[in-house]
Amino acid sequence: MSVLPIPRSELTHHRLYEFAKTALIKIYSHPYVTVCDLYCGAGVDVDKWETALIANYIGIDVATSGIGEARDTWENQRKNFIAEFFEADPCAENFETQMQEKANQADLVCCFQHLQMCFETEERARRLLQNVSSLLKPGGYFLGITPDSSTIWAKYQKNVEAYHNRSSSMKPNLVPNCIRSESYVITFEVEEEKFPLFGKKYQLKFANDISAETQCLVHFPSLIRLAREAGLEYVEIQNLNEFYDDNRHADECWSKSD
Image 1 (cartoon, rainbow, N blue to C red):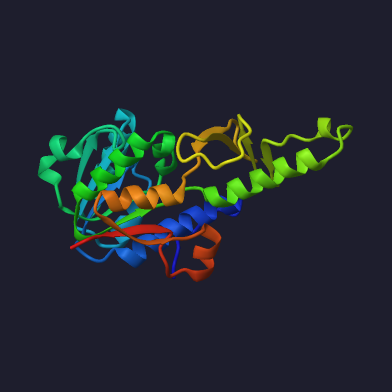
Image 2 (cartoon, one colour):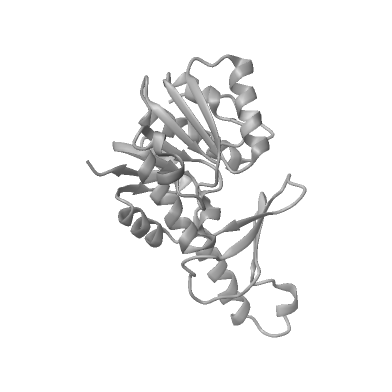
């Protein structure tokens, strides 16, 4: 499986992220399909989609600036596919009424950025998946990438347990709500015993980043439940490292029921 060249200076996480996007596109795309890219940003993946020989690209983003940059990228580079761009929030707006002309047109809907932030509330997550379902053709696929919340939560609980098992004289040097590695720091605001289904936020900061980004844990059983309620059939969820080792399975995808 081929991937785009990645600078050595980039962190392993970012290399895996780029690998996953390229691999998912290669696995699930085929020539002449229609793709809908949610939270498309500045159109950073247009080269990947051009390599896949797609026919139509629909870019949707909540930010006007992102849509403008994505449109400029497509126009300036003269990509060999038809592209349309829409300013809309996939987690807040009803595409069935606001984008009726795009109903059931996409062979693939992808959300490679910000999928985790849809889990701020159940309503936002449900709206996203209902919009995905309205855009997909029967038999189409939804592809998404998020941080692995199950692994993050397991490390968090291990930290909290270690903190409470230490003697009081050692506790000042420990931060139970903070997960540290050589490449990143994750900080939770509030200590909790149970995995919240929605709205569990944390700060993620990579070693080379100036500031931290706010993220949300994704409760995968709730994601699967809401996807099924929206008419999507669960296919697979897979950790990025496992996906890299496997390189032939989807990280997150559902096939719309025929």
